[in-house]
Image: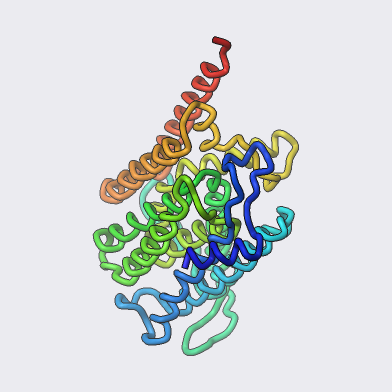
Length: 350
């Protein structure tokens, strides 16, 4: 599938031309990788949807999967338009918003969150507005739950979007996230979630197949659609699996903090939070500190694996969310301090 999309992108001349200092590749690279992700994921899901009312575990409603599929369609269309015509940020964001709204209407939502300062849960499903019944299932709006779901998915999409600056970085981290989601689905919680594990295996296959073409030196890029679709799929599946939001957040904790810092930095500089991409992200800092592209990507893979292991085992230890957040923040600041020090050393005249 990826090879076919490469051919189509070249024919349509949807390629990333290295016409600015922010772009580190040396020749035009085909975009539209999101279409490869879209077709690979949805064709398999559609096959199961046509032949069964639920997946092998029976804990994921098909209406949820259909919502995710339609959401990825919006992202694929928006990604194609942006890769081809370079849409302005205010138009780019319309497609992620539509994708999130479709998923919410399909019933995907965060009904509760862990109390960050103690034990127990904060329930978010108290204020409900019923919309309609279809095929024996109720479609509804749950105000607080949908509010958190909206910003969770939008945040996940923009985290992976801003992270997509080095060959294989987003596709590899998404692959790692899917691997941990697979093991958590089978080994954590009171119910073994075979259907979540099945979807995780599907994500592993999709992104592993794409990574072969996307790792440095890349022969195809994810593009706008693929970079947002990675966060969208991880974020959506973490919700429908019931308890994987925390694991996913830990896996992407360093990129998520980089995303938040980017938003704060741009606001302080008087720029739009969704302004044109720059070279001030964490992965660019690694390059400025003397890392090669491969070394920078592999280093971020390693950080993701470490935090994935922490998230996997912390579920049994009952650590507070605030404590974990503080630890991640300290690690993030130490990484930044090291990179700034390396940059100053490199910049010194010999």
